[in-house]
Length: 255
Image 1: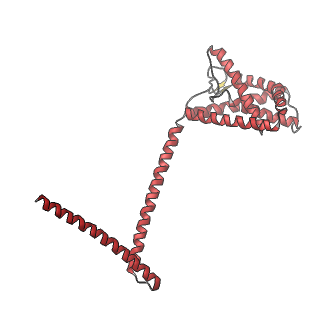
Image 2: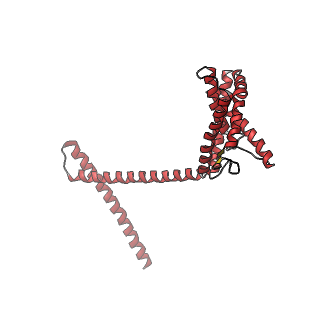
Image 3: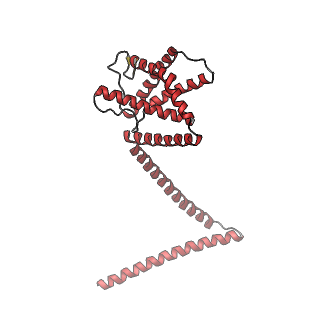
């Protein structure tokens, strides 16, 4: 798994370098390619992972060796499969296109095209014959602790970068705030309802107990409840009486 993670990150970076240099030369101005803030184009990483799977299967003799034209066709169709849905999803999510082949011949809704897929097919031949074996050989020289550390480090970086990018490109923060406010209001209503229900049940229970006579200990409890209820009533009356006396005294002073 660590090997696949590192291959994904390395070739995502190579893809970013390639696209940035190419688009900068074509546009004659700096073009920072890629969906994320960091210098990576994940679509190249996903494509390379597919190539690495085929490479491992051939090395393990699970499938026969692929000829150059078979690799070309796989890269050709794989690029279309990756590009079209990725372009569609990004546009639906963020209302923007990271690439547009509308001006190229034989394009499909500007999301993918025959010429670019041919270029990816040729790149796949180079990838399978030279790039993957070279990079994989270098990774095999690393110790297991170093592989674990690098894989974990890159996973953290990619995760943070993806989170920051999605947050910046959408109203994600506002949505989270709205969801949190809705949750807090709902919980406030629930707690308030529970306390109101609790008081209602308590009053109802006292009322029922005081209406009936029970033998023994239950009768004693009922009497205590009545007594406490009576004490509360007397205390309220006393307070009310004090207020009346104070009002009378104030009225006399006014006279």
